Amino acid sequence: MVRAEAYAGAGLVWAEHGHAYVQQLAQSLGHRLDDTLVAKIAGDLDATLVRYIDLVDNGAADVAPGIFGLSSQCRC
Image: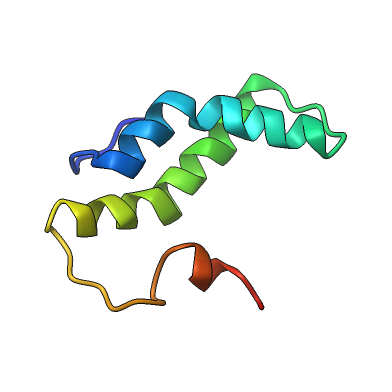
């Protein structure tokens, strides 16, 4: 995963462990994913969730609560 913006805490952890997390989650749900698909999913999560967390952490964005983050991804 390579992006133009600097990684902050969440992004650094995701960059290091995101691929393994996706693989482990898929396995725990009974799915076998090849490395290409795992990389695609991890990259998509980076681009659609982790990136925005890092932008706020780095002061590059000012976002109101609920616009991004885990709570905005849940239909609770």
